[in-house]
Image (cartoon, rainbow, N blue to C red; front, top):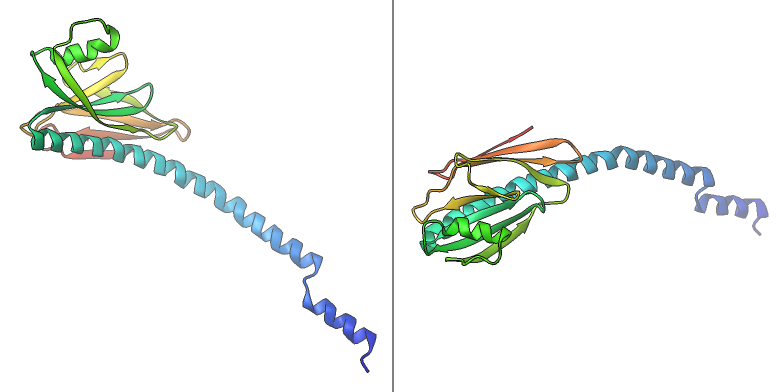
Amino acid sequence: MRSPTNEAGRRRRRGFTLIEIILVVAISLIAAAVAVPSFMRSYQAANLRTAARTVVTAGKYARNMAVLQQRQMAVFFDTQSGEIRIVAVERASPGALDNFLDARRDAGRDEQFTAEVRRTQQLPEQVRIVDFSSPSQRQEVDGVFWVNFFPSGVSDSFSLRISDEQRRRSVYIEVDHLSGATTTSYE
């Protein structure tokens, strides 16, 4: 016959004590408190890298399509919405691209061009285009900047800065107009 004290001791050994459970939960919370901020920094840095890749990919796509289809392409960077549009442009006159942009302001004008949006991409949230520069001063209308890509494989040279508003970090992207080579530097 078994004694009641032996059976009570066996029951205690099968489970966990309250102190053991509290200790495991406390260690888990400490590990999470250390890991979550690191994970969030990594996630936010990934947003900036994704935005830089989106800009570079849009330029390469426009350059390739301009050469392959022997059509002028343009990439539009909307600083307000963070949208990037790749457009195939057929000109009927030398100022047709200007008319295309003016149509944004004055929809009633007689337009002498056709434009076909090929691809639209969105920058991640909290990431904005904060600076755009090009040798041509006329490449901006109402906060929308654009870059022309020609059938010969050349483009307008340009550079832009993309900034992550939360982390106060930015990336500077510069594109060579002849080769399409891209230089990115993170700050």
